[in-house]
Length: 373
Image 1 (spheres, rainbow, N blue to C red):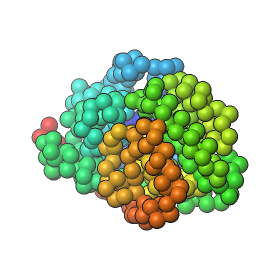
Image 2 (tube, rainbow, N blue to C red):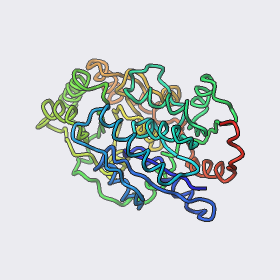
Image 3 (spheres, helix red, strand yellow):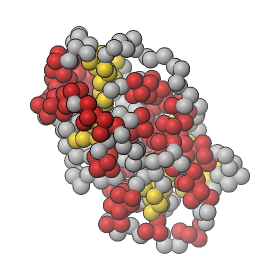
């Protein structure tokens, strides 16, 4: 079975790498072709080095301050060329980026089956997150195999009319990646010199829907929290997008006990996650990773497509309102019982065997199974 696996961003390769490595343990059954679109160039390359993976094809589509329209156009042209050249049996993609959506659409045009890892996530708000919510809905319409990370994600797919026979609940492969790497880094030094007496707040915020005033609110809230709590240090790896850099640097640069860094490689970020007291983020992947380290998460978004964490009590949606962010952060800093309630829960996103389940499903793959196409 020839499988073409496309990825463009750091989260995609983190979540696809366990699947790649699992498939490559069966070379007589699988031929894997790795295609990097490099939608996010630098931070993608960091991940490839960590997992010791080299793309067979690199499309190098990233351009400075790239528009969605421009990215969509160049991806369709280049991905189509790869598909016509390689003619795989299956296109395997992960998540909800523009790379993922265009890969599914290009494969559909070529009548090539699509397998979607992390299928079925929904917020039911087409502009939140933007454009990811629509991207994943489009992919679900086009995909042949839907590898849902949770029962809730599978339920979303069934509501949209996807046959149960094409939906597989596997757990999330991000937990596979996290457990594998975290075992190897216990003795690694932290990437920053931080005080052992102070509590670390780890922050990421970079989503398109937060550009402008929402991101300003987040930054002002962080500044207030740092000012009110001398025993707190804040580390914020700042995304390279100019819309993020401009606001964050303007509002937080040179603020005492707030450390702004370039995007960190995965190992350095995991080290900080393990060291952190709590995490504030608009990232989807971090919502899934933090529970493995028993870290509470405040979600800097209006809605999340990962409600399992909120339902389990390990995450709380606080949005981008300055006052709400300060209140909920302060609650976890001051209320030990509330903190322990959030850190005592089991990770609802996986057990570290998702990639094996996906591999075993594909081991049973037969072309005649696709007669419904």
